[in-house]
Length: 118
Picture 1 (cartoon, one colour):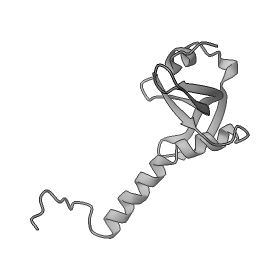
Picture 2 (tube, one colour; picture 1 turned 30 degrees about the vertical axis):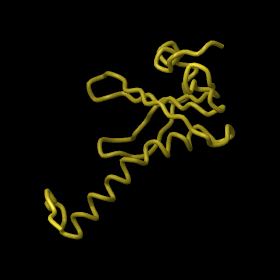
Picture 3 (cartoon, one colour; picture 1 turned 120 degrees about the vertical axis):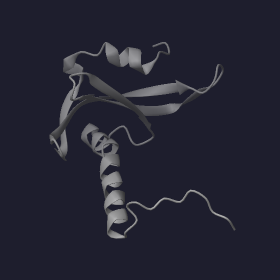
């Protein structure tokens, strides 16, 4: 298969090609996404081809009805479950929540450092 852009490939995927995954409960209800994985080789430059990697495409419906696509390359084993890839990609929000809570508890919620003179 010739090289192509991932957004073009994911735009023509059928609904049957995508798995629906219930990731976790969110602030506004359950976080449900559609995802697919594929083995790919990326171009490093015009002459070199990179190693084989796992491409994970996650599609999520936004509040306004549009769809947001996120693309990830991973060197994890191909046998890794798609649900595990999706869980990890959506963990960033949990990490941000933990950092915000820690700042509040430490009294740093409104603390900003603009300059520092040594």
